[in-house]
Length: 360
Ligand code: NAI
Ligand code: MG
Image (cartoon, rainbow, N blue to C red; front, side):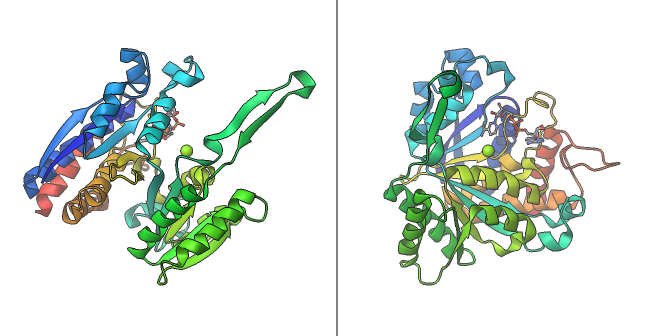
């Protein structure tokens, strides 16, 4: 198959880990007889530096002409002085809005070989394998009004949690579709005892469920979900929730996997042009030092192969190589434990490529 992939490395370690994804995809193309064409665009701080804005029109154009998109990470202290509407994060928010990337999918899997060093007991991590489906283009982060008024003692501020029924229906449908291809269970997380938007969410979940007789639907209040995620995470299969709840719960869930550097994600649109990115940010504290863990980015590439291109075997090969390398005790600094010699980013990338070759 011939596919065009738009690569948006962004800032900081985004560039370093993107290199890994491209090298791994190049090996996959050779092994399985595909042709991957990589195009590259500016976004975030690097775009501000070179073009004065965080999402230049040519980047958007490049994305629209691709079959799938990969993004590293954006942001860093260098651009803290930019006005709010011209910050690096704006580039990513605008990209999500422009391309209708409404569903953020974050698989959470506890790797057996990393559980010895987890803050969690092994018994808690046993069988942890679930997916968080987070709504990405609505809710509190986009609702209007969002503003301040008054001065001094009379000052006030407002943000708005707004959803249309249709936005809620499409994210819940994405969750049920996902559950139908997994263990047939959806946990819908809301705050229906307090919020009107959550009551509409809950009703909509029941309506969508009617179309999926084999999928079990469970409602859970978000405060309880925060507790259940660390008390009994193995109970979850697909957890679906609105934008801000999903933002918070997915960071909490990342601790289950051992490191932020291990978590991939996809952001899905209705028109089939999807984006793949690691959950972590640009890590300015280690940027440029060849220390970043490239696995979240490489696992995001595996998600792309499976979801966007239907290349199940190819995706499995990448995931197996990651497993193989971790099982052999190879670790980057974020996963290295006492007495270990951590691998550099480049060394980890080389290990994964070797793992792919050995597997064949
Ligand atoms: P961060 O995820 O960049 O880093 C948090 C901590 O985890 C740091 O100590 C970092 O060194 C470590 N870390 C993250 N990824 C790692 C990896 N692959 N390998 C090894 N260690 C890793 O989050 P932080 O520090 O809150 O944000 C830094 C910048 O990134 C900010 O400008 C923020 O706005 C931006 N950011 C961008 C995101 C995106 O582009 N999607 C997401 C989150 C943050
Ligand atoms: Mg977050």
